[in-house]
Length: 213
Ligand code: B12
Image 1 (tube, helix red, strand yellow):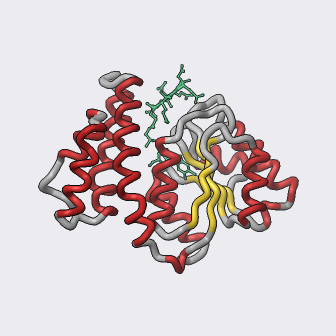
Image 2 (cartoon, helix red, strand yellow):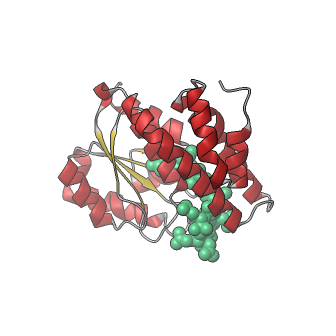
Image 3 (tube, helix red, strand yellow):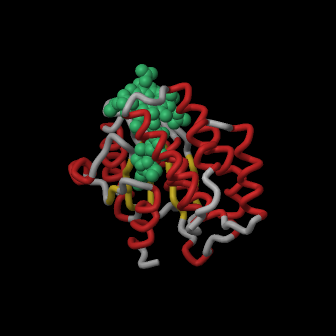
């Protein structure tokens, strides 16, 4: 647990892209692990941002700066997280934000934590049509497909993905996990998805549990 330095968290909250690279590098030199920096500083920082947005204490331009700061830090940590990953759990996972939805901060966090846990992750990006998920799953022989949606108007596009996988027979070989602020366990069950996780660490736990890893 990092206790001494609160400044990365502050850099995320303040969207301070300029200083975050320096702070992350400094902490790595001080032998903090990439996982500690992610878990103890970056993720709690984004949680604060989400809470402040809900209370109307932060607005969209500031949120975008926070997202950029977070992504800058993640880009530095990514090679280390991948290098440290346990390759025994290497299964391929497809991830993307469903059609009509451009939100990707949470999806990117799920991706980075899955990569950190040793999975091979193919990120299809945002605004991904159902057919694209199916094509990528077949191409990469993916074990799991992760769908993200933050808008209540796009969550129904998850249903379309599940239906397409079911009609193509692909659901026999692939598990579909959903997440994002607009969806829930109940919604996941109602569309026939295999799993729902409310956060990136829980998403990793669930995928591990699928394969007893
Ligand atoms: C940042 C943000 C934006 C940014 C997105 C930047 C980006 N690159 O993503 C911008 C400014 C572009 C944006 C645009 C819009 N937004 Co917006 N946005 C947000 C905001 C403030 C934060 C979202 C976020 O990143 N949270 C932080 C991350 C870490 O949390 P998260 O995404 O929930 O992810 C976590 C979990 O949900 C989970 N998870 C996420 N994905 C997945 C996937 C899987 C498989 C699993 C297992 C788990 C999982 O793990 C993550 C980490 O633990 C939310 C408010 C909020 N509090 O959620 C509104 C919000 C989502 N936006 C909203 C709206 C309305 C819009 C716009 C329509 C605004 C407009 N009028 O133009 C547009 C839509 C554009 C589009 N077509 O998508 C509404 C949605 C309301 C609704 N219920 O439909 C919200 C809730 C704000 C509000 N209260 O009104 N937005």
